Image (cartoon, rainbow, N blue to C red):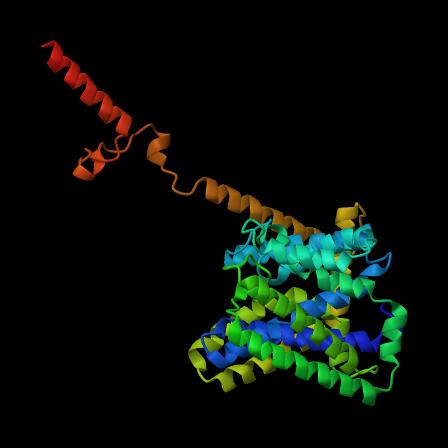
Length: 397
């Protein structure tokens, strides 16, 4: 059973706000045809995942976080839930994550590598440079979430390198002073974000660290880094070091919310589109929906059974066996996900299959109608050869 008293309310509050903003933005995401909604989504996307990655990096230093069991848990959760999302919405694949499940693959990659590369003296500069140059290569895409792993790695490493002493110093400082500093960081980020959004053409891919559409996008990525790091400082200084109703609980159970929220945000978005047209109504419904989703999946009761399920899923990977209900459900979920891939492969292989071909019946012969345009498809050397041969025949005659 989780010992809530031993957890840091300071960090849980940061995660609680971020997961609420994440769900809120995902409800709004399908409605960016509205200019106001588009601006709200863009501003949230500029910092919400970088800040989440930063917090993950801070807690990624422990032996437990880097253990095989922890890695196995993320791998199995990705396999199960990404598979179902891919099968239902026909997007992504086993190697190309669907929607927000890329974060599970990224956590695996970061936790396996951070402890080794953190030893380099200028690692932040290296990761920052690699991320900027990666955008020039179209092959660095969503396959195994590699574009996001590289693009967001500087934030993970920044959190990883943050010492506990430095964090405690910020947490225990007088809140009135911290809040004023946080407000200053928020104002600075808002000003930079306003001018950056007006100057750079930020697409959805730009926010997700996908390859650049044009070279100028590299400077847009630099601006995104600056905004995100300033917003991280805002959260560090503005977060309260005491429990806040609902927010602390959402942060404590943020993984459960993250895993389950995406299909529900898609359903709600489809409902909103024909029913509400004004941006204020869309934003209000999105906010209420985000609160409800976080309440349903972020409460301690739901999180308790989700944690049991995810631990049982990890046990499958590590070879441990159990007969608890959660163990049986986890094995069934993995089996169903595997069967979905088998069905998909078979379906794709036999798409367009004809039983006439199987019985040896050929397709009816269709006479080809030649046109003048087809003459130009003949190789020039063949035409030259015919001309030379004709001239030789005429001379010999």
